[in-house]
Length: 310
Image (tube, rainbow, N blue to C red):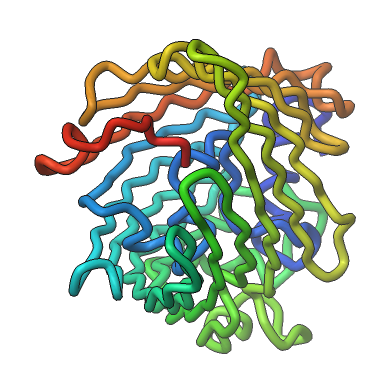
């Protein structure tokens, strides 16, 4: 095998083709500004229709590194008693491609004057492809790599809980509780039961009012999946005059993160994040870049005086 950067990318792709790497759900740094990708119970948590577009280029200068494009929209229904959403995610890692389209439904229970608890369900399909024949491997007769995987559909179902009020939130979710991936498993490696594994997310945040000009928002997310170390995101964002978010974060065992978001007007936001790796991969890459556009539709965003915190 060769020992150049393309080889590193091939190893990444191989890890996504056989059960070597357990982290399969997409990873973004600006999750705290639209959590529908994490938790279906987030749908309808604002009194207006909300959407976001996001693109992440991970590990620049590494051939075959992850590239992720995401779109999500959600809206309240029946005066906020329910919420519905749609997400589309295209994830590209090495020789593999995954197009995930999912619908989200949430039922919101009022617990107090300003707090609610939402229960959410997620159902969708993931269309998976992998050009396994393009990989560099030792055994030329290995049957796993003889046949490419082309547009293999996999049904996926998930669940989430989300408690929130005007300045706080706590969520727990499993985006993929069950996946109909037996056909995909048999094509990749018949010795395993499932290809898509369960990932558990616990995320929380709170906004502190410092003075008329500044608000402080600490937040965290804990990610767990079997056969992989627990990963924790620690973040702190500062809001200046309800217009500019500046944030710093740390992802355990992975990277330091810098974030910037600007509220152009009550309906339009733009955000940017940069990840500086702390692991050994920093030898091969200058970091990861992420760009986000946020949209809040209708007259409600203009009428609401407080800024959008999450």
